Image 1 (spheres, rainbow, N blue to C red):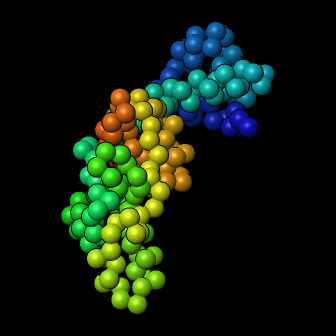
Image 2 (cartoon, one colour):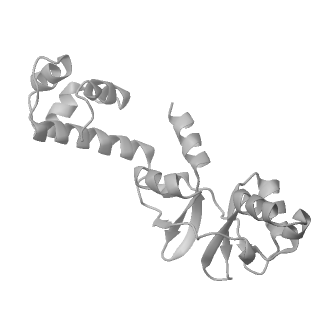
Length: 188
């Protein structure tokens, strides 16, 4: 389903694209774009789809890639570390989650939420801190190539606390919703 036609002008202006440039890219007359934006004509579904596809791709290009917004270096904990160490690292750096590695690969993740849930399950909440990270860890974060457009990771961040960026099979960075918010405020 396409957005409403009145969104065309709003998106175009936000991206700094002129009617002339949009018309040239779509191979239509500038007057056609003007009439669509004024509401004096309704474009075909195919033309409306092309307009929104172009505006969306321009928006994605402006946001950059996952590698551009990733935090580096990636701070991890080992599968042999204790939860207390992971908590100290999260507190020190202001992180809400960390990848867990087995020395060579990411095998899971630990988060404030994982620790909190496990703490509620224990009679002695302090005992959680001495547990191995593997006893409270969750699923590993998804991994994407560094050159993945930011728009391509937004959906992943709706269901995951973080996304790892990779280059030639090596983890190079981590992207969280906090990184996206920082990007948005920089672009505003």
